[in-house]
Length: 438
Image (cartoon, rainbow, N blue to C red; front, side, top):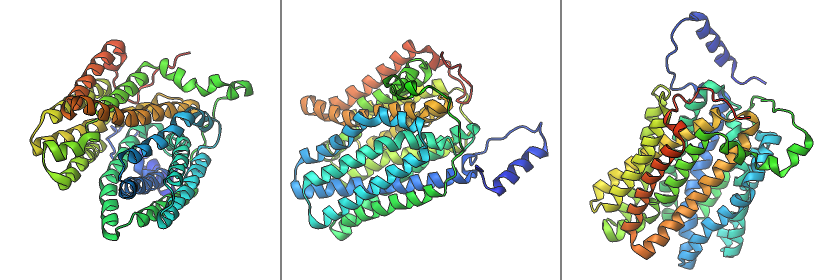
């Protein structure tokens, strides 16, 4: 199948014929020049908008109906359980079967689950049924994440991987800025979450339609015996691959502990009400600040040349994330806190782009599903556990000490990574080929 449109092919061949010795200039829209990647990015943005809107509407409706913080906490638990149980088998399936087909099936299941949530909202159905729908969404997401991550590599050539990571991050951050605000406005205007559930269903359905038109490039997978393909050893091969690939393991470890320890955003309602005294309006700005910072940074990364010293930059970004978290925890100034959250979000996005590019460039095609599954499992679990850790330490020792200790812990993790994986300090460009271990 053709990866690009005829116009894309003609423009590429014309450029190559101008001068084979002409120096290559950085193209900030390199990945966007491929039709299939554009369709995938548009669909992902629409779905992400729906998800962010759903988060706001679901939280509002559950708390409005039950007035229970425990019910709200149960949402994260119900969503993460299927991810923990199914991520590794899902990664194995993504490496054996058609990834576009897996994404289509997963999104179709999400359409049905979201439609069920809409109906439950109309009839004020049982909380248990709502949890059941969320469990189904979590299970579908466990299969969707590794398959969609690996599918992206089949829509663009390898030299565009880093550029595609910046565009993907930009799309997600834009959805994170616009989605919650739009969802909150709709709930406030209609005094109901039902419309938001319906719009989320429509968003997923639109993505399913776009997926039909994506012609992902076929990438042959190395032949293996049937016994190896179906063995548990093969299912856990993603974990073994990361253990044998120090750069990838170090990058995932940095992000894992930064999210787990640096959970300042979880405690934002407490800081807005009791420490900064800015009320719900200030809370809205505090919640938006990390995504706005990340969006600004990713737009800069899109228009700059590829990283030449990716390892040191990643280490600096995560350490800066920890320092910004410490300053936020100690601040009693709304504007200083807002600036730290803006900086925190921008530095976190640098980490996201570098880690995402490494997962694409350093993982062979036949392993991308399983390695992406391990990454999704670690990051997803750290998000939920990080929120729990922040809430528990804040309950025991106060919110300020909880946030400051998390920031200090993040900096300590960076130091440990530098000592344990010196390969990270020497990591240059993200495109350079790393010898795969035997």
